[in-house]
Length: 274
Image (cartoon, rainbow, N blue to C red; front, top):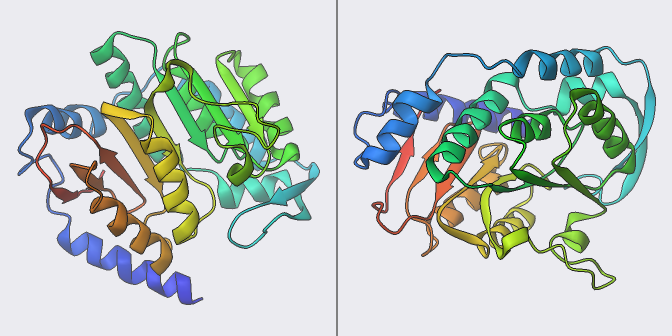
């Protein structure tokens, strides 16, 4: 209840302060283009329908699975639940996932190179599917604690014909870029072009995960953090990240935030609406 009230207050504050809805006031032409012509684009892509059909299949799946939760509440606990309940309460919205697709599609064309993408928090693999569907040449590594969720995610990717995804199972604190066994999971090419963090929603874990990804970031990299106003803990983590020396511009869309590292950008933080 307390977090629900907090999120309502954060949403109201965001609505009152997010006046940059069309890119107005954004100094960088590159970022203005990103907001005005990419994020606010309303065109649909051919692959979205198939992904959304998989979402609907998950929303109506009667199967019961045993989910292991290493997040802020679970701490490794296993509980039984319906796949449909997981889909209803935990999946990223279609609107946001499609926004990530647009950003990646633009970045892929801008760089004209295969992109290295890292996702923390696979869940049922629907957002992963959006990230992987941008281009077959891109490579996605996704991390998930629950073997049961991975099994469902891999079923979805198989039905979608996606073959450019590697999944790492286990507590992300133990598996991110290096296994306890000593086997390295460092990103291919030793860099990350796009990172997406939707895992343990605590202050300490969020900063750990961000630092791990930022270590492999370059000037054109982006890292997206989900649920930045989920709780006082998450909002504090977001503000701490904004103050980092290697972080230049950030964009706050309330439900998620985008972090940029380009040293040519002003140190500035925008609040926007999609």
